[in-house]
Image 1 (spheres, rainbow, N blue to C red):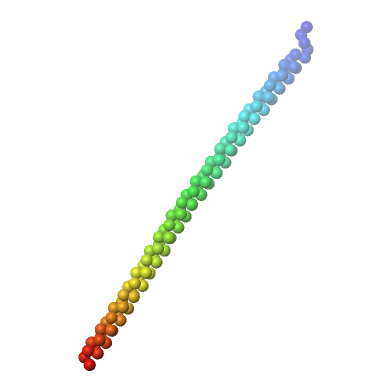
Image 2 (cartoon, rainbow, N blue to C red):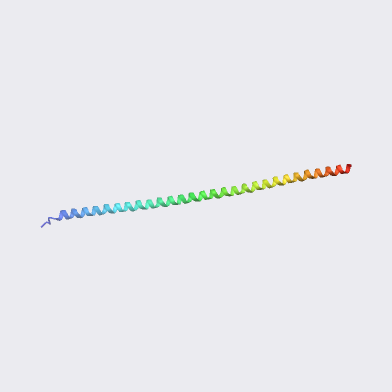
Length: 106
């Protein structure tokens, strides 16, 4: 009594097991690939976030610099105006004292 189907069923089982193992490995490979893709995507997002942070920081610094320069320019304008007014007053005082001298001579 040797079962005539035995080699066939054993071969069939072996084949099914190989298929299952291969499928399992493919699933593992897919899972690993998916995980790597997710990590890559996460990394990309983090990089972009860091880049955005860096750009925001740069913009903030530029805004500060701009504000500082605006303030400086305004201060210089004010000083210039003050100087012009001082010169104008000095000129008027000189003219006034000349008039007084002229009047004193007469």
